Length: 204
Image (cartoon, rainbow, N blue to C red; front, side):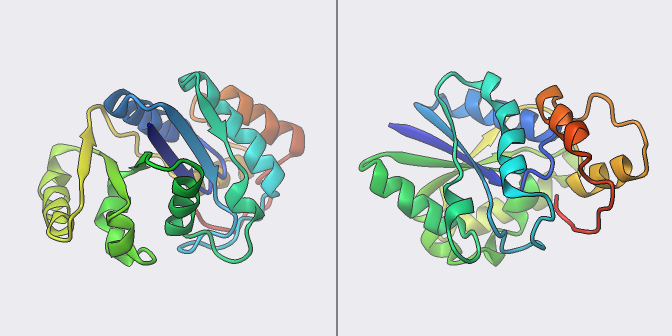
């Protein structure tokens, strides 16, 4: 069994997330896809958006794959949402499964700052998005360094959409048009709940 795990704050989910996950699905051909919005992300400030609404917005990923789980497991845990804990839980629930961890290339570059990253490398296959040519050398150097520690890295094909959730929240708060950058199901939840009208948190 191949499980593709995609985590993040998703505050809000945007077309960059859609593109990243779509490319990972094509590269992995998984048995199941698990989308796991974070409770308290270790590298970012806590989201001001209620967890229940972030979870609802993640329904925008469902059309990408028929066998998909949108899970609130991390949201239900106490303390920071460490990917290692999530992977260990998934493996306990699915003995013998291979976990593919979908990350953006910026996450690959900063992977050595993750909690217990060397242990995590032994448990997952990293699925990373290629960057544009001007970033290729830096990305390959980071991949080579991680492979020295036993990393198994699968690169996807496709263009990178450089979109920041922080920027989107700022644009929404300023009343500017962000048409087409947020999937319609998530955009509807934002409008219904008047999200990001006063934003000051940060996330990418």
